[in-house]
Image: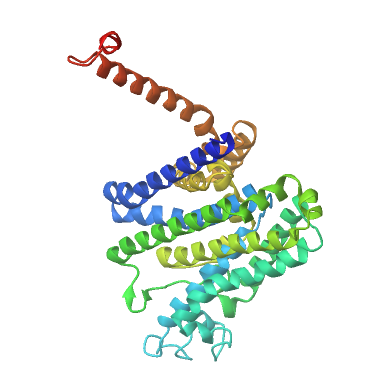
Length: 388
């Protein structure tokens, strides 16, 4: 058998086993050992994992480091929040306002009519489409403007940071239309179901987990396809790929939009599980944190990105409870440690140190089991078999 094909088959098998284990952890282990409050907390962590999975493709496979993924996470979250806010802002529920039938923060800001761009979000179907298409549309505009002019590397990272800062300022400044610094809050129901109840939180966790697993499967398909191989080739030798006749800009735009779509879905699920959306999830700091999730898990590993997200957020919650003012310093130290000590993240540590030892243990166990079978009473020895 071709050694390269054998190696690829082994990597594919390892990835499938890792996916099955992750599915068991998310769908069986965590619901079995945690209460509803903690399960909802883990569900919130998993919404960030959508962004981390997208970054594995965008940064790990294609070499495009985006420090503004919070933009797309926030846009998806705001789209869902707009639908939920309109559902809870019926004329009956807002009868005490001077203008019933519009969100409360609009009434506080003397807006007397629902803005035109809010109107389509009365439809749940439109909202589901907008959760994906709005982030993708902005990602396409950014990608087309940057990649067709061959802007990349650190320049692209800085530009995405600047866009995240601009969008945060815009959201805060347009308080009458976006809720301002407080965001869109007091979200209660989804199609009539109370999303604040324990039962709803339990169901939303599983919806979130299944969507995340589906996103990982899609990302695996992309990476295993010819497109995935072209992305890796672009990361390593972009000029060679361009001179081979491929449209490098088009491939970069695609993977950037794909990552934006995943981030938008994560943002929508965050809004459903937490019950609000604010500009604090759109800016520079959350975007950098999302990159750290990916880096800790391993920017080349889809499964590792999920574990990295869970680990960093668990540490953030635990550390912040005791030393809230020191968390940002701890996050910076963690990022430096990842870069210097284990640049391939948890997945790299596993493949370099844990996996070889497990293989040796399994090999010795298999050899011992085979030797025991050979020495078992009634088993034919090599000399007996030769005599026969």
